[in-house]
Length: 474
Ligand code: B12
Ligand code: SF4
Image 1 (cartoon, rainbow, N blue to C red):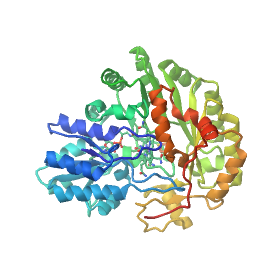
Image 2: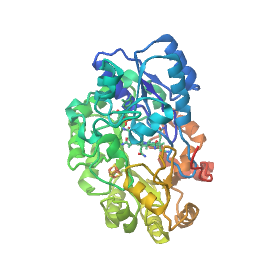
Image 3: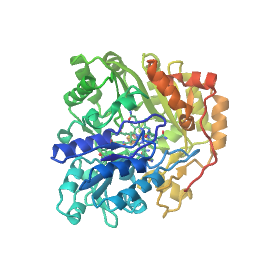
């Protein structure tokens, strides 16, 4: 298994999905080695070295990201990946399977670009085991969830979910050198559920994880946390679920289990919806050791929320903000600039929200433009509006930005309107100085989340990331 992700912005991310699939392969009886390219200076040389010492029958490539989804400083990771694939093909006859979140969104395009034959759409635990167990390449190509380069997906991801009970424990520390990640961000990821039953206009998560919620047994999730605490120095965990507070009732079961077991750890969540958030949930989060969360309204204006099909309105966003403002939890508020229906009026509402609700313990994360993915409502809208051509394969990033505004005007309205320095723009996170700050922060034991120091870093260090003219294709 080769985890190919080498991005370190906004933080290096532990290859949880790759570890999970590797564990499933090992449990199925395969002898597996794990190569993580994240911190290696020369990925092609690293793969060549690995192949010199080990001649595998099969090679699995995990591809988390295709690109950085950044309209203002776009970067595709595919060219470097193609070099790795070419090296593998030149040195090995092994059967190759590619998977991961990035691959799941554009499987045919990725296969064509990399000149590979087989990809998995969605979760890989079962598909990878069946693929590598198949007697020949033809049978391997018939495994559910596998896409062949010239063929169709055998079965839609949605119809072949792994039952929650089938999800094994990833045993992250068994495969990944977690110490290297913990030296840069002292937090390990945990996934409590897969899928999302919402239908936001731009979202790909249902393609990657399935379109219904599939929750893991809270006991198994807490077992996993306890095991990581036994085997690693990690004492903080991030729930990477698509939405932490859905489906209704799950976070309560999970956090009650944390409390029942007396787990002494800190927690955060990478995505919370304002929808239906209650005071009781926030109290429970505080009691269970949650200290911060990322909340993703994407806009604070009714018209854009409706156009994005978020399933909640402006009042709900304000209501959630008031609850969070009264809690001890730090919140990172995520907004997308330039959504459908965005104009000066809607942006003004978001700016007013940022001034009113993003308090001194909080920050806001601003993304300009929205990456367009095939099969989404946003793609259909962008074709109708002429932003992209219907036959654009979208492998190299294209972005939606409301025709009623320009990115430059939106940024200037935001900069002029927001009265505090706690807005982090996506481009800011690409500043190379951040990696050094992260390591220093971790070494001296600076309390997390690191985004809480954004205002200071911007004011005192003048930290700001690259911001260029959009470059659409490479
Ligand atoms: C949580 C999250 C984050 C968090 C991560 C926090 C953390 N501590 O890990 C944060 C906010 C930091 C983040 C940052 C970024 N993210 Co992000 N993130 C996610 C999210 C929601 C979940 C990822 C996750 O951990 N899933 C849980 C694991 C278990 O699942 P998994 O990795 O997908 O693995 C499963 C399958 O993919 C498959 N699989 C994996 N590997 C393999 C290999 C083989 C061979 C097979 C067969 C199967 C297989 O099986 C696994 C188990 O089921 C996804 C969206 C999503 N729902 O997937 C986006 C997502 C992966 N992110 C994305 C992006 C772009 C980014 C950023 C580049 C954005 C940016 N510019 O800042 C950065 C990159 C960070 C980095 N260093 O790589 C994109 C990638 C698509 C693309 N366009 O490239 C996604 C898909 C969101 C989207 N836009 O649609 N992210
Ligand atoms: S709630 Fe989040 S994960 Fe679900 S469809 Fe909407 S954006 Fe995607």
